[in-house]
Amino acid sequence: MRLGLIGLGRVTWQLEADPLRSKPCTHLGAWRCLPMVDLVAVCDLDASRLSEFCNAHPGVRGYSDYRAMLAAERLDLLSIAAYADTRYEMVLSACTAGVKAIWCEKAMATSRDEARQIVDAVNAAGVRFAVSFPRRWCPTYQWVARGLQNREFGHVESVNVHFSSNFAHTGTHAFDVLRMWFGEVQSVRGWLQGESQWIRDSGYRHGAPLTESSSAADLGGFALLDFENGVRATIHAHAKRYLRFEFEILTDECMLRIGNAQLEVWHIQDSSCYSGFRELAPSDPPKLKHVNLFAAVAQNLVNTDPIACSAVDGLNALAIALAIHESHGKDHQAINPQEVNPALRILSR
Image 1 (tube, rainbow, N blue to C red):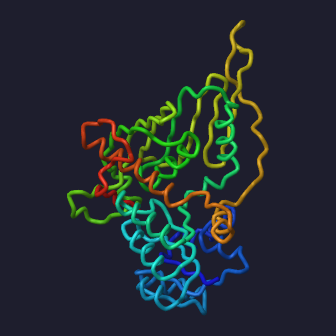
Image 2: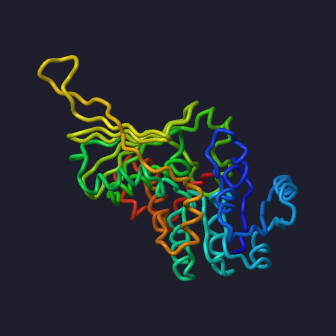
Image 3: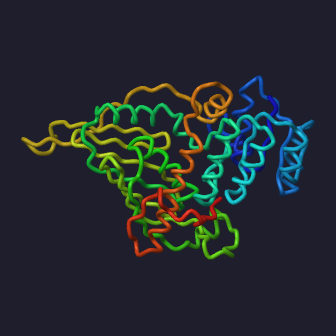
């Protein structure tokens, strides 16, 4: 199967050099786990990145124009890791060119209209399409989903989510997990924070100029999500000098804390401090199978199983981020993500 890559940054291949990450940890690393996959072509607008990659991978053809690559290479598989404001055009072109499976980074587009075009295009062409929300493939997050569905944890009373920075680039990860656990969001209220100096210095936000009145910079802040099943989640998305991505679920029987390499389960026990009282205390979490999430995405794209995170999932996660922005601009009133302004754009990485 002939593979092409668009965008030659960290998540495409460079992070394989990180000694602390479990391998594979990039698109290329994951695709190379599959013996039937042959990397034949790559594309990047940055000439130095393109040259670096091609020098490291002799025999792979390099392009500065993805359309030329799609026209010339007859690709079966494609990874798209360019900036979000170009992804939907790349997906539409790939569908037209006959690509059979696409792995697209998140957020998969910048607007609900673009995301809807992606959904329609991949459905019409019969393309297998996965959004890069790899927690969908994670045994820990799947265990929580099963427990919630089977009411093993009791009645959910509150959900708190903390992550470092922006709603579209990072937050869509969290929104997809919440949809996996609790279903669809009914209403969103949002409060955006201004862009900090730390964000500007880090280069974390995609720095495209805001030339359209309907476009917005990708920001963080605070949000309230009300789900159709009655669950409410509070979202804290604030710029930090450290990495954080954590969910806290509090029920009438237990507490769960789930994050990067984190699973804590707290159950009711007799208090060690107060006679006659009961408190939550940590207990041993279940022993779950380790799965490399990048390899799982690639494998899912080439097998016949349903895609764990589809284009519709990508659209609905993005719609929540867009609804937060729209709510902020409308005095924090509640917005249904399915009714968000289809032309509103968030320019994320």
